[in-house]
Length: 381
Image 1 (cartoon, rainbow, N blue to C red):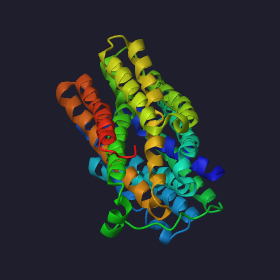
Image 2 (image 1 turned 45 degrees about the vertical axis):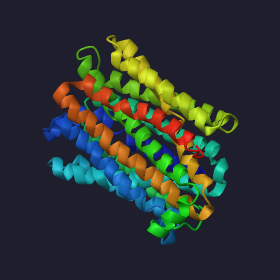
Image 3 (image 1 turned 120 degrees about the horizontal axis):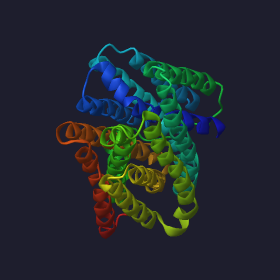
Image 4 (image 1 turned 180 degrees about the horizontal axis):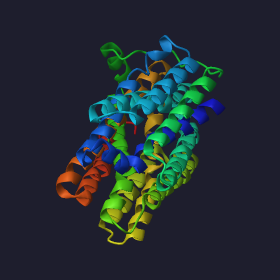
């Protein structure tokens, strides 16, 4: 379990590495906010491709080898991205980072879903708490380094070295393999959803919307605060908001793990989504910097438990379909992460940052509608 927690910690750091440095990266590449959105698109498009391999990779590689290859791919992508001469090369290399890091995020969770089945919600929350620790530390550390004048390229290269160290450690780990899982074939999909089509489709769509909303806040909040409150905040101060966001994510995931089996997944998700709508909307409406910072940070408390609960739905399928269900749910998240931040960047360039960020709030509103729609249709959410 120690190596899985360490991998989750590293993958969390990689996920938010771009956010504090986004302004510097755009300046280096000589591009605008729309291009910034395409960087997130490339990352999550690569992540979608990576997670779709999750159901068949265990047929050819052991668990340590999968983690080792994933860390190597993420590390090489980060190193190359730091040296990219233009946007096209940067998009390709950041897409490779997305492929590698998606597997680092997804594979440990798939192992737990296969081992603990329907009771995996608590273990998921525990495991992804380490992921939250990684994304909490990284913005503060990278924001501090950037404030001290360290080039963003050196920050990315340092993370690449950590990935190579993780790949070496994974090679010495002893981990069980995943349960024999069906691959991503039409026959397998039909068998997996037989009698539970609403659950699988619903879980995929919920994760599309959840990841789309979370990555929009996570990816753009530092840049947003620097633009909307220009002159009143620094990259380090704005980056700390992202760290506080993830501190509250940790708290929320611990609390979710304690209550989800007593209260039920549906009720937990409704409370979390409703709270996210209120805090995000309040942060967008706030004209005061401190109030906006506080409310943006508080969205982390409500985003916190959504993913572990949604991911635990994979454990409700027979063991042979757990990997398939989990990879589809994660792939849906990659789609949301690719599209919503891209929308934020595109609208921000044309209508301003407030309009751009507000557009992604629709993801949580749609989640609430979807949850009640699925419940009315009898899906086991």
